[in-house]
Image (cartoon, rainbow, N blue to C red):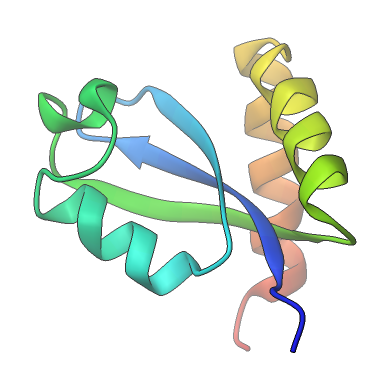
Length: 90
């Protein structure tokens, strides 16, 4: 069975965004929440999941992660807002 590939964005306690790649969003969110995730998020707990996107492959997922990381804060906020509107109530 092929793995699924996801790009995700967390909003940290200080209002900043953290973007990452994973094959298991729930597991990765749990790691971040327990302070076992990226060094960036450890000092910015708690974090909340504000965006996910599925990618077709590992390589396309990593490319998309880099694309999102290179976005301005305003572009990320728009991405998150649009995703939230699409997924509200589901």
